Image (cartoon, rainbow, N blue to C red; front, side, top):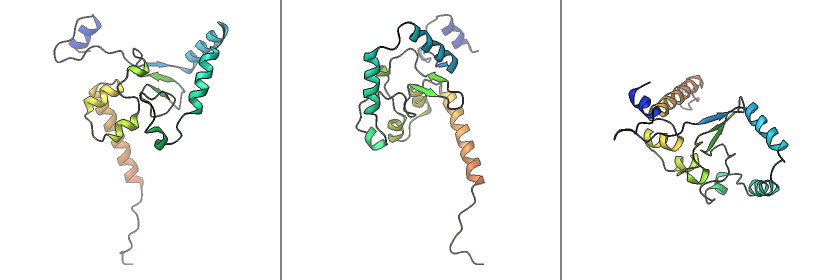
Amino acid sequence: MNEAKRNLDRGASPGPEEPEHRQRARTMSRKEMARQFRQQMAAGGIDPELQALASELEATRPRVRADCVPGPRPCPYVSCKFNLYVDVNPRTGSVKMNFPDKELWELAETCALDVADRAGITLEEVGVIMNLTRERVRQLEMRGLAKLRVIADDEPLPARDDEDD
């Protein structure tokens, strides 16, 4: 653990070149979510007003990107796989709260597709948008590029029409 992180953990203020301490992402397992749901049901169930709002939101949810572009920002559809507020692991079903210290409407960016439409941005900007460090973004970029190289190597080259037999 480096000195700056130790100082932040002790409550010291960051130096001029160090960012303010940010809340790390929090992952909730399916077991934990099921326990919270059971507790909520035992305490009186889900608020009918909240249930009606969720149903209304689901009915108006965009189905394709063209429907999404003119939609409200911040995007209220956190269950969309492109929403940056939460991530769901498809293998385990766990939910990762990327910004546990913020509400949805406090985020500058909520849709990964909106960010992609802007074209190239720096690793630092990606880190801020996704609540990750610049180094972690770089590591993920390298992992993704390696996977793309493997896929490209596995794909047979397309047959060319001008080849002679």
